[in-house]
Image 1: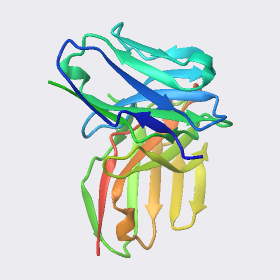
Image 2: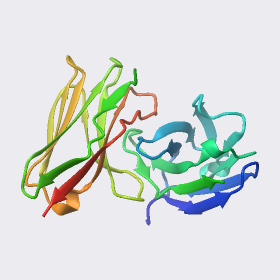
Image 3: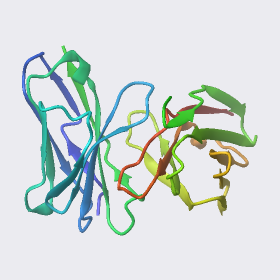
Length: 113
Length: 110
């Protein structure tokens, strides 16, 4: 068990392009979370999956954002028509028994130019 | 007003000192209180958590919650340079979502 992994670690894209990030949770963790963190701020909740079902989405998740977790394993977060305000660290976390014990990945740092 | 307020620091203390990190919150529904530690360019890692009011000790770390005053504290005894990181409080009300503070950046000076 190597923990939560995220790919890519860094992504630079031009405004208006689409980007997709991947998260592989700790095996057997049925819950998966996406957060966004900007400089000097704590992570902000974006969305949550239990197995393959997306059960909650933050109002921060505009219609340009979509997340999936096919088969309840890895998850992808896609941002369409990126804007400069999307520049942030996108963190993925997973949990098993207790939702509040969340294990975070290293994050994907997105820079929109 | 943010649900969780945390002094962003930065906070610098000499090695061996006792460190006190604090948060206040406004949501009375918070039941679980977590502390995460985040090193530079890494994801947060869970340090410890408490349920409802009271104290919890884990080695050099003590977490304290006072629900009557909506105040959360983390104490670090015998601080070490390896404790230098950003500390995030993250209360939760039982709906799968953690609400993080802004984090306090701590530096332990050897």
